[in-house]
Length: 359
Image 1 (cartoon, rainbow, N blue to C red):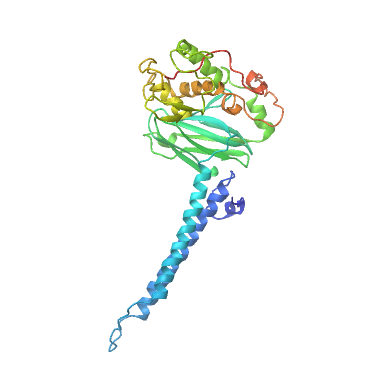
Image 2: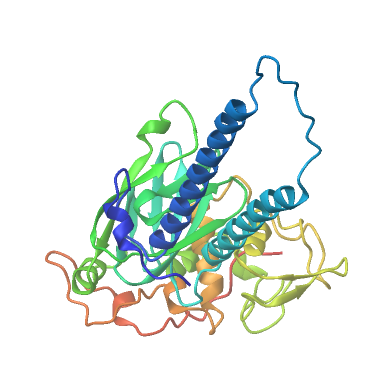
């Protein structure tokens, strides 16, 4: 909605601006500061002026004032309108921050005392490091393995609490290549101050070279497929015919009817719950206590891999969510790194296996 106000980064005490959203957020912040300053000055001028004008004077009896309707309406309506501007402006930025583009590249970040574990769609993993291409919308799906954390990148003006038990997300579009800090902004234990990392924003060609190696264990979807087989999920979740449990092909982001009459969407949160607590929501026509409970047996990273595999079974899923990193130019392998199958592919074709654990 608002243009990029990069000049704000040159003001005293301003942090660098390195994302599309940062300028808009800074402009609102400076607007709030300006309004607060003006209101503070006006209030003090009024207090001092009225105290001087209506001070007690020897021999002059005080005059009782009964109000001034026009003045009272003015100082009520004008602040109210200013507050409405703040509310509307802040709401607009809030909803924009909560609505990542559908074609955004998805990266998974798991918080654990005291580190950030990062997984990319092609299977690459990092700890306390994040690499993103400049000018590309990036969605971070956040999870915690232990306590409440809070993932924040100040130069992008993004921050989000990471709460155990469900997924959170944030998104940004980096506009300035560089090496920037990642912080945990929620106290999470005695080594909280050490839970930091770095995000590297790379140019198109540089990012292509960095991403060309891919993950040594395959894409996220391929790793999820291995877990799916190892945990015996294919016994009940058949790919092309009905088994003891629902078919997971073409399931992702589709409505699911439950046995209590409700209908839910098979998004990431639903799949996670179904993997870890299969009896929480029973699909209509199926029985409870068929699928084993994987709570405590699978890590958050394992669950993310299984969900990536389920996504790969739905053709409409964005390629960047199941193993193909979006790059605009040809990928050149970095020295010492091999070209992976994931980076050569233009789409993900799941192997003829079954899907991931769900009731």
